[in-house]
Image 1 (tube, rainbow, N blue to C red):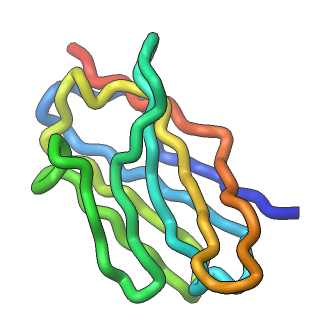
Image 2: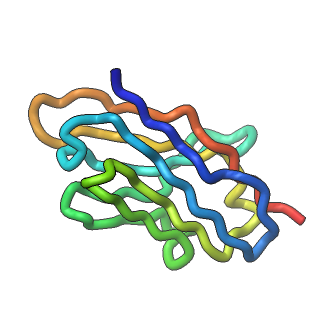
Length: 119
């Protein structure tokens, strides 16, 4: 059974940092594009960042330069380093795995971890 387990959320003041981590049981991990999404209260879920199986990364414009996504194919983890956090970064952050080679299965979601940016 596929599992994505996020950790590292919490409460942080504006300007602070948090590091989220996602442990994935998908196999083979290096055939999956790994992403982070977030959902703010009362808003739709939005894509934040992706890291493909070759390590190439993409970011939502509003987090570019502040967030860094990285993956470890040996440990089967994907992290999101979040710096210079702002109140509008508040939300539940979800790990997402999408296979990009055949057979196409998923995508898969984690249960989410809460990030709150506030004084």
